[in-house]
Every structure is written in structure tokens, then in C-alpha cells.
Image (cartoon, rainbow, N blue to C red):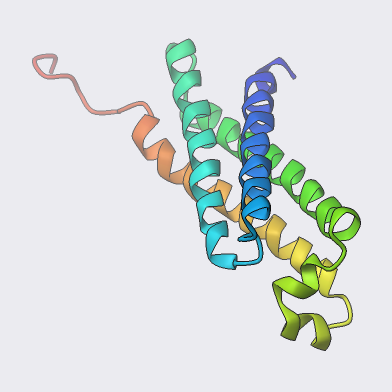
Length: 151
């Protein structure tokens, strides 16, 4: 469990940033525009990147591909889980008309619209975490190339 402490902390901080961004958009009345949710990818990506980078700097001798990969997935997964729970709470308890406002067409056509939206929010977060972790690990993975002059 000690190996997961740092990624969980970074995940909590990342989710706090996602929630703060959403609430700022809500204050400005822009939270119903789906376009602004693209910035969530940048926030999540920054959290995953910083986790992997910090792990590599903190313990370069034990850092490997699997260590960084798991850390990135845990960070993104924790952030996504917490943000999805917040989003569900916000849209059902704090602002019950939010989902209908978000998409009036979908809300009228689908009976379980709320569940669909929550599933989409969670899926987008987990997929973003996976893709960004794979991408960032290409930067941070240990090289198998031979050093110059040592051959």
C-alpha cells in the first residue's frame, strides 16, 4: 500500500483541481458548454505527468516502466473516481436541472439519462488517464540504449 500513497495523494489533488475548474465554470455559467470539458484532459494530464516525474526523481534506482505506469493509472483513476462522484452529487443534489440544461434533447429521449452522463464522465476520465500514462511513460521509461564509448 505504501507504493500507492504518492499516486493517491496526487490523484486527490488532481481531482480537487478538476472540481475547482468545474465550479469556476459553474460560477461563470459556462459549465453547460461541453467544449470546456476538454480542459479536464489537460488538468488530468498534468497530474499524471507530475506523479510519474516525481516518482522518477524521488527514486531513480527503483523506477521502472511498470512503476510509472501503475502510478499514472492510480493517479488518474483516483482523480476520475472522485470527480465523477462530485459530478453525480452536483447534478442530482446541488443543481437538479443541470443535466436537462446540459442536453435538452438527450434528457427527453432517454429514460436513464443521468446514468448515461455519469458513465460518460467516468469513461472519459479513465481513458484519458490510460492514454496519457502510456504517452508520458515513453518520456520517462529507462533507456536500453548503450552509452557512448561503452561498447
